[in-house]
Image (cartoon, rainbow, N blue to C red; front, side):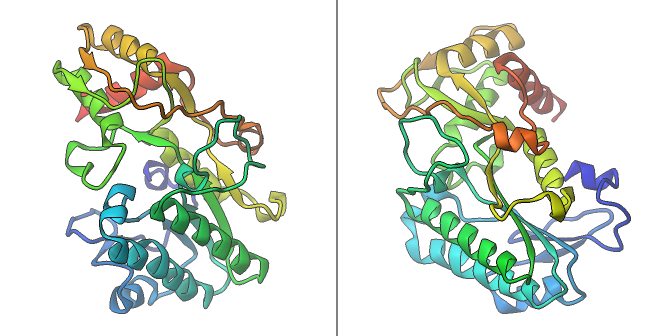
Length: 287
C-alpha cells in the first residue's frame, strides 16, 4: 500500500482499512471486525467504493484446521463482500488470490495452467476468482485477480496459520543469527516475492486501463524462483554470518514459472536471488 501513500491512484477522497484487530492509521478510517459479518461490510461500503483491495483471508493452515471458519471468511465472506460492492457503480476490485489456487504441478506453470487446488484455502481462492470474473463479465465490477507466491518476510507476529511460515522465518533467522529447521531439502525450488514487490503489483493491477485487459483477469505474479541452498548461501553473504539450516525431506518442488504475460502487462519481480534477499533483509533491518 506504500504507493497509495504517494498518491499513485490519484486524489483519494478517503481511505478505509479493515482488519479483525484494532490499529491506528494517520489518514485512514479503520473498521475493526470481520468482513464476513454484515454489520462490518455495511460500514466498509456505506459511502461507496471506487477501488477495493481485497487482501484478507484465513491462511491455509488455519483454514484446514477450522474448515467452517475457513469457508466463512475465504468463500462466503468474500462473495458477500463482492456482492456488496457490485451494487455500486462498477468499482475496480483487486483480489489477492494465491498460487494455492493452482495446486500441485510438475510441468512449467503459465497463465494457461489449469487450477487444481488440493486444499480448502486454494479451492476457495479459485472459486472467488471465478465469481469475480463472472461479476466482471456482467459489468457489475471491474475485477482483477492476482496470485502472489511466497510473500517474504512477514512480520514475526503475523505467522499464525500459515503453513509456509518457515519461508519468512528463514529470513528472520538469518538476520538474527540463529539456527533454523525447514521442511524442504536443499535442492528444492520455491517461488518468492518481497512485500514491496507484491504491494507494487497490487497497485499496478488497480491502475491498469480496463480497455487494455482481456476477459481473462487472473494472473500469477512474477516471482523469483529460488533453490533453497542458493537462498541460504545468499542470506549468509548478505548478513555476513553463516546461516545454519537443518533440512527436511519434503519433496515439494515448485516448477519453472513462465510469467511472460504478467510481465508484458507491467507486473514486476524482485529480480534474482541476491536482489530478492537484499530487498527483504533491508526491510527487516529497517524494522
